[in-house]
Image (cartoon, rainbow, N blue to C red; front, side):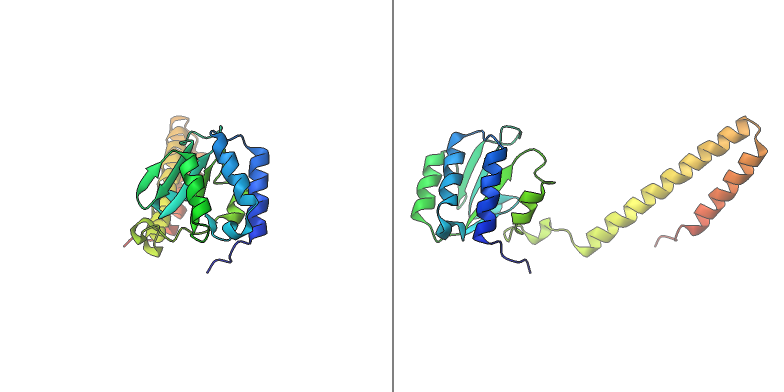
Length: 186
C-alpha cells in the first residue's frame, strides 16, 4: 500500500514545477496556481501516469514535451478547453482529479516521482505480472548469453586467422566454461 501524498508535498511540487517549466498553454498555469491556493481541492488531486484512463483527469505538457498541450477527461468526454476544466474543478471540489504532467525527463525526475501515485484505473491486463517479469528476465539473460558466445567465437576465429595458438586455447576454454555455466532452459 502506498503512503498518501500530503497536501504540502503536492503544493511544493506544483510550485517547483511552475518555477522550472514553461507550459504550452497559459491556462494550465492558472489551473495549477488555483490548485496551490486551495488545500481542500489538493486533497483530491492525484499525480499519475496514464491519466486518460481515469474518470476525471487532466494532462498538461510543458514546452519541452512533444505531448499534447492540454487535455481534460471526464467520463469518456475529452476537451482541450481549459476553461471548462477549470469550471469543473471549482464545481466538483470533492471529486478525485488525476493529473499527468509531461516535461523533459519526467520519468526520471525525483520531484515528480515523489508525488506520483499508482493509477488505480490501469486494467490488470496492462500491468506486469511476476511471470511477465520472469520471462523478460530470462529473455534478457539468454540474449546476453548469446551475445557473449558470439563475441568469443569471433575472437576465436581471429586467433585462428592469426595462428595464435595460446589465444585460441584460452578463448576455447572460456567458451566451454560459459556454455557449462549456462543453466538449461525448460
